[in-house]
Image (cartoon, rainbow over all chains, first blue to last red; front, side, top):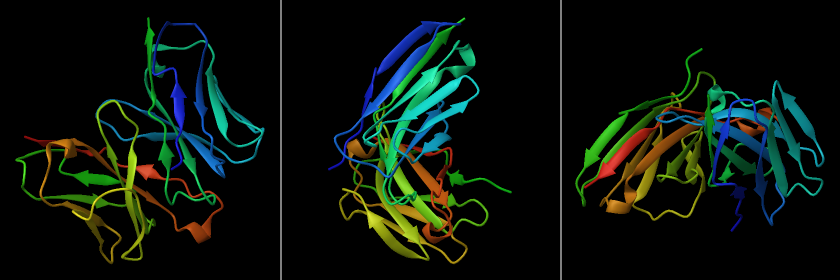
Length: 112
Length: 116
């Protein structure tokens, strides 16, 4: 069974602060995706990383995929209240969306 | 282009009953996956349908079953409901694997099922 562990589980910070969320596994994934989910909604894809050591930037969000493709991190610079939500990492096999293994999520609250 | 839509949005059922949840995939997507998300947890893969056939299944009992129709829409059926089945059920559609290196999954808003 492939498991993805996310940390921290909960994070509450002030607007303007930086934060990092971690996603770790003992398994190798061919791709890793980050989603954000808001209450009452389905997850929305933020990014897909596929190459070990890959770094992708999406405005104030920076995503890294570990060299061994077993771990990933999401760094947010100068967090804003609009960043509040549940952040989920999900590992995929074979480069497809065939079956995603999700982490348990990090609930981020950014206070104004 | 329409996104993934699910119905109903909320549902309350009694233990032992049966339920059917529905999903319309995004235009052009013929692969549909279903996930169960318990409160405070990440989604768990139930199964996937491609070209009207089951194409992968997670660790869920046989009372969880599904269908996919020629228009790629899909149903999730759960028989003999248990209290632990209370969760958000998510449908995700994607392009067929062979058409892309990384076929992204696009999720619907989910159906909140409460079993009492």
